[in-house]
Length: 317
Image (cartoon, rainbow, N blue to C red; front, top):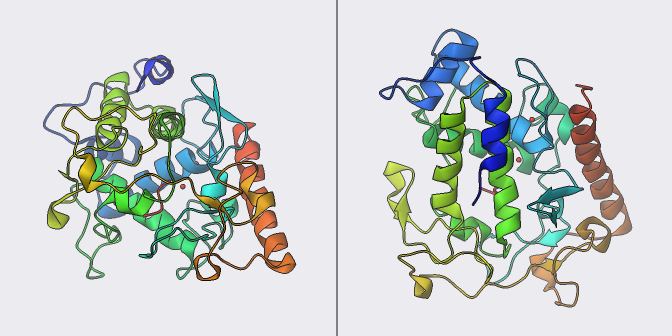
């Protein structure tokens, strides 16, 4: 995966922040640099800012003027190829893994869509698909970035340890993501970090770590969360994805393009000819379709508004 774009954008930050000492994690360093005190609450705030920006685009200060379209932008491109990840989040595709033989369609924009994210929240409530997704993203990236104040899960800290699934391959196995989709996701995370003044070296380190984890087909089990042990982590499983040097393809099921659950929401993504099992899809009644279209439009509209300065979700963890 190439990070030329990220490096150029991060370089625009100049000397906004000093070089991070090697013995201090990215999370700890930038929490202190941006929010002054390195507390669990501030680390959670930092991850909220970065993840929300990566999901819906720029929406708040502090930032250094780098434009972030957001993971859910519907007119995105990566290396000249069109990318649209929104249907994987709004129920347009039967692409979520809930333990069955096929993917299911789940609306992860079911609790306020972009509005709570613009208010530095994951969702309006705490029992929705959207809340689960965003909080798991905060927790997961907290682990990846070395947040020292994160955890445990006993209510004693505002920043809980990661509570999602250990294998990101299992989470994403019904998505059949290609290198452009995964590359765009990683690029948005890096751009979000750069928009808050993260240095070129650290943006590159984050991008390379995500590429190594997610972007190589048939990659062997890798430990991300120590308590969960080594797990299959590759989410780029399409046949066009680069093959891991230590490929263990027998551990992965054949990649299958996700079925279309709602033609309007799918926007041309997925396999429209694949029949859906009634138990594997959400309702596509006119009322539900209207509701989901409204949620999708709210999220996409919020992202566009953020990009033009009006007012910051992948992995279904």
